[in-house]
Image (cartoon, rainbow, N blue to C red; front, side, top):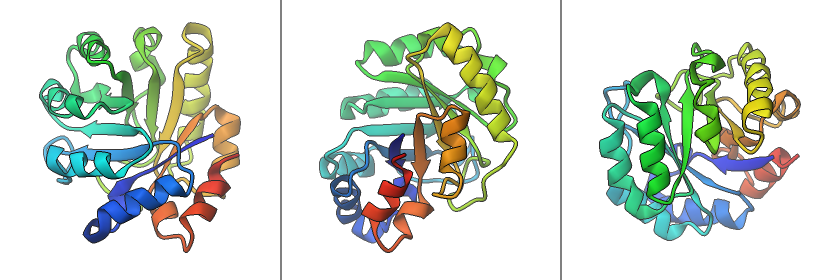
Length: 213
């Protein structure tokens, strides 16, 4: 299991310190939630702050766009050379074109599914993706509780992934803790995003280690 702590739950007054600390604690990716206040009812960070995160991080960035006008934001963050950029299928009219654009910029493309969106919505895109991010909470705010029926969706997504593109990773975001991580791994998850669980833990290392199963 790869672990991608979400900096949305970090101490923004000491952001560089926290980013360095999770990297030293053994995380695999640094998950960055970009929200525009339109696609979701929250506004987070832009390229200036993400650039500061990139400078502090010694692990690759995993940028999750929760925005309208995905292409604009992809172009905005591409110069930072993240490992992944993910966008929501619910907000994109031309997903295949955007996947190609992200890949042409030397970045791995990923698609995000909201809790209500079925895996079949991206069945014909999986072959072109490096990762699918499944939201196990409604996007917009950290600290929410895990939605249990998402597990069935992960299992169905894994069935599709294994047939169409076995190299495509499955990522989960929302309410991940040491109490449900084994169930998520059994369902087919390869990468977990954990915000509150990591950053509110007394030890970043202990929290991350408990998810590395």
